[in-house]
Image (cartoon, rainbow, N blue to C red; front, side, top):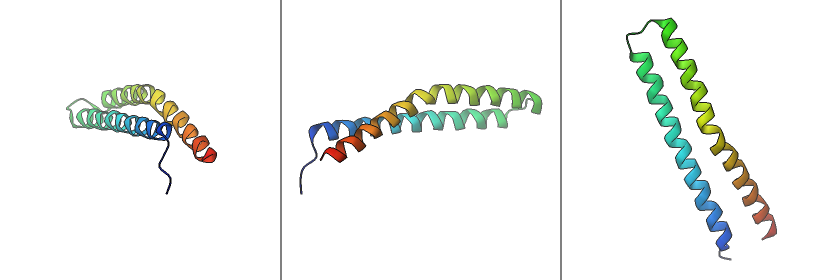
Length: 82
């Protein structure tokens, strides 16, 4: 069995790090949504706040999703070259 190339290991570790960061972002998002839902604010205000939280979550997450896509494309190209 051939050992993975050093570049493969580097990409793999970067993918793991990005996935970990996305997980952190998603957990923080869920906590914020729960806090809003659990608050005593009226439903209209809650809906407004949750929309803002969703938009911020998407904006915060998007660069990591793009990076993950790029890394996975590199992984795929590297695996085809092996």
